[in-house]
Image (cartoon, rainbow, N blue to C red):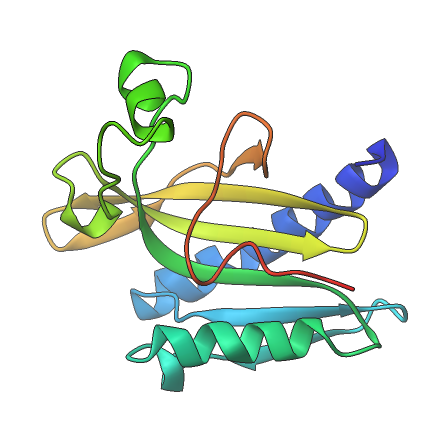
Length: 165
């Protein structure tokens, strides 16, 4: 990815992070949304709450938006369970070689709850996440951390890894 594209995506994700934190603080949750990025820098937000129970349909909707000519990129924003596995560790190597079955983050005791941001564009992809910190019945959002898609962290799932023409 070109450095100027990464800088632009970081700016977009930081802006969306601030909005999501405000929404989370006010409502106690962040519903899944898809932000459409266009040439005019207009951002359109698609509410995906109605598709939470049908992830395959949600993934199809995301792909359909990504295939529109005027859409240069999308940012998927949602609460998520993640499982961080260092692909260079022994466990990571066993998983990538198929010797150890992959486990869904929702099924792992080592899972982490995060606010997840996945920017996918024709010029490159960038992911970021912020931990959801729970104490009693109060939840707050921690600091945003960037991780390049495909560099130092692989992201898997129905709702990330879409393709642009």
